[in-house]
Length: 219
Image (cartoon, rainbow, N blue to C red):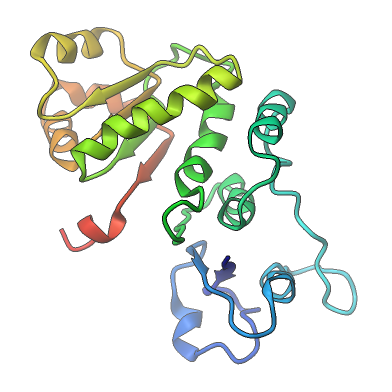
């Protein structure tokens, strides 16, 4: 269980450290709640300019940005969002840069992907628009397999490609001719794309998901 805290705003929670007010705007993180409970802190963190008199914010429906078909699939498959998903999706839907920090098994990966899948679902074959990058090659193949469930659940025709150092040359050439809607890759393979004719594939990218960010932040 965690809370969403936006630390770069003028209306940061009372008592926040001074340094918290200088973090880049729109950067979000999931942090464990301290004494006082999840619900009360969620309400505090959800305050916005223009909130109702008395300072109380209305509760945000985390599934509201999803299309009816995707929402129906999610509720049928999972019932309700995890705390990480409930707090991340409104931030992602706002279009800003989002950092999600939560324990393993908290639904972070689906939180990162589902809105992107939903928004691209009506336009399969429109070029590569969602790019997922992880330094762990084995994780990339797991992600590709795990995406099959949501894509099948919403009846999507979106295509998924994986490019790593093990990808055969013929598959790389095919990817250049027919780009996947979603590309799963590693930092090394992304560098090779950027420094070759494959960089043209990236011109249409709208969303980048960087996983295991702690492993690449210093590079």
